[in-house]
Image (cartoon, rainbow, N blue to C red; front, side):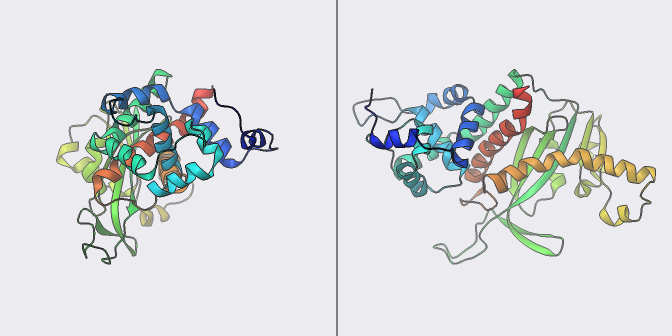
Length: 316
């Protein structure tokens, strides 16, 4: 057992907890660590004749902190050295060795190589289901653009070939698009796909349904969904919003206006995961080139968003 240092004693005696400490305590209680570690363990190196690897639990927690605060690998290393609350969260002490940026990078590459971001998302949803959060009879679908650098001032002298531009309203956006399917009762994301930004929302809709829906909600971008050949045979009730121009022409108390308001109140739940990704975790702009790495990162972030969204149900 390590002897407490004067810094440890000072930390224990401070008068208040910071927002970072409160958030880390919250996530520590929400994340099913054992299940996630077991998903990664078959791919994680065992101790051999070389340098002993860090404990999987510590590396997983470091990776989570990196995603919480959208940090680069060097930035994550700096935080480990600078912030005591983060070291306590990951279970490491400053007198001992701390992972450097290369070790952090290698662990991230391990997760990307084996598509474990998707695996962690699945484990989190399986955990939530074991706690009683089951998919209901409706799915809300939506898509959001994640920006990418449009500049060609880089080593390759070109934009990312897997990212494209699209026009939304009167503005042009360059990047990728995240498509999600959300349970209409709990607001938990059950499916996600990614494409370049110029792919229409309707294209990915069949991959966002779990197959047990009786109703599907979508905004005006999904107009015409029932006329697509692949969707005609689906036994669902399509709850698609009117286009804004048509809705403005309705009388406020008319049955059509009331129906549109009801649809909007249900669809509002699909915005919460995007709020977590873009505002809470700061991932409004891609960090990597290509879709694959960003997809794995987004899947893990959506898993965290599901835990935070489901917190009210887990505490009940």
